[in-house]
Amino acid sequence: MIHHPTGLFHTLAAVVALIAGTFVLLRRKGDLIHKRAGYVYTLAMALLNVSAFMIYDLWGRLGPFHFAALVSAATLYMGIRAALRRREGWYEQHYYWMSWSVVGLYAAFVAEVGVRMVPWGAFWLAVFGALFAVMAGGSWLIRKNAPHSPTINPSSSSLTSNPSR
Image (cartoon, rainbow, N blue to C red; front, side, top):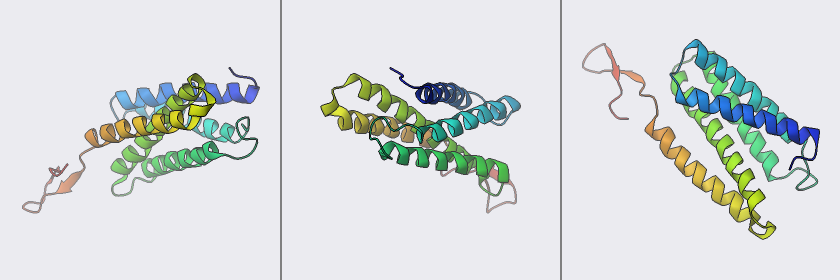
């Protein structure tokens, strides 16, 4: 149950980020639609992270979820930074940072739903169980779908796909 306008704002930003992040992950990369959906995701996540620091209902002060918002903001920043700077290896960096940003969002969502369905005594079990399950699954998917960066083939001067991945 949402009891305050800040909580409603935070929830709406989360829903927009979940939809936009999922959309970006499921469709073709690099085109105009990807970029626009990515900007929607980035804005929603920025608003989500800022609003997280306005919510103190659980602890009455800064708590572990505020630390998670800082980690979330860092992954988001690093992913956007890589795409905007376009330095060597930017595509892989963008992929990894943004993928972890979305996985972190999914983990937060599952943990939030989980803690609302369990008694207070099982709070931390629900939080860490959700985090572990989503992060493990996300890690596997990120590695499975990682982009294969072009590399210089030593036997020729042409670019080839990296066979080690």
